[in-house]
Image (cartoon, rainbow, N blue to C red; front, side, top):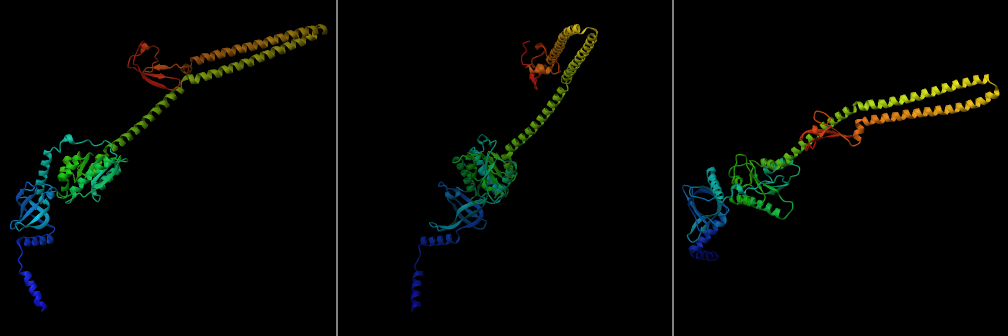
Length: 460
C-alpha cells in the first residue's frame, strides 16, 4: 500500500516539466558548486573588450573551446592586455549564462604562459607606462646622502632581507632597518607590494622617526616569479612614493618594470644595501684616514720641536754664561782671601815693630807713644778695613755690571723683554724691513717657541 503511494508521488513529480530557466538555474548551481575554482590553459580567440570594461573571449585548445568572461572588477587586477593567439592560464569558476543556456568560465585570474607571452605582456605594460612619462629622469629623486632609517619591502623569509641585513650590519653603525613584510610572488603579491609602499609613506606622515629610503625587491627567480614587480599597480606605487626607492629585484641580469620607475636600480638586494651604506662607509674611512694623518703630523711636529729645543739648548750662551758667572765668583773669593792675608801680615809686622820699640824707649814715653801708636794703628786698621770693604764693594759692583752686561747680551734676555728674532728662509737675521719682500716666508723666534709668518705688506 505504502509502496504504491510513494511510487505515485514520485511519478507525479517526475512528470512535472521544468522551465528552461529553472533547468539552466539548476545546472548553473550544480556547476558553480562542483567547479568553484578551476585552472584552465588555452589559447585566446575572439577577444572583445566591451564598453562596460568587461572582457569576453573564447579559450581554444585545438579540439574544444570554452567561452570566458572577465568582469571589470577582476580584469583591473590583470597585469596586461590580452589579445587573440595568446596562450594563457586562467583561474575561475564554471557557470551558466542563463539567457542562452551556455556554460562559461568566469575569469578571476589570467596569466600568460611561456617566456614569449610574458615578454609580450612585459612590453605592453612598459610601453603604456613609458607613454605616461612614469620613467622620465626628471621625476627621479636623489637618494639621501646619510640615511638613518632604511625600509625594506620584501618577504621576511626570503634571502633578500637577510642579505640586506647582513650588509648594513657589517658596513654601518647608525642605520636602522625597518622591515615591511609582503609576498613577492603569487597572485596577490602585486597588491601586497603596493600596500607595503603606501604603508611606509603613511608611516612617515605620522611620526618623527621617518624612513629615509625604501629598498623594494626580492631574490632571483623565473620570469613568472618576478612578475609581481612588472604589475602596473606596483610601478605606480613606486612612482607616487614620497620616499625615494631603490629597486632590487632578482639578479644582475634580471630587469623588471619597477626598475625603470624607481629612483635607483640595484642589480641585487645586496647591492642596494651597499648603495645605502656607501656614504657612511666612505665617511668612516675618510675620518679614519684623517685621524691617522693628524697623529702622524703631530708626531712629525713633536720631533721637529724636540730637535729645535735640543739645538737651542746647545747654544753657547747657555754653556758659557753660567761658567763666566762661576769664574767671577771664584775671583772675588780669591781676592777677599788675599786681602785678609795681606792685612794679617801688616798687623803682625806692626805688632813686632811695636814690641821692638817698646823695649828701646822708656816706659813713660813708651806708654805715651804706645797709646798714640795704638790709636793711629787702630785708625789705620779701620781705614784699611774700609779700604778693603770699598775695594770689595767696587769689585762686586763691577761684577754685577759685568753680569748685567752679559745678561743684556744674552738672546734670552732680549726675548724675555718682548722682543723677537726674525729670520728668513735661509736662516739670516732680518734687521731692516727692506730686507724682506711681499709673500716671503719668515720665521719669528720668541722667548718661548717660534712661528712662521708670510709678508703681506712692506712699508720699509
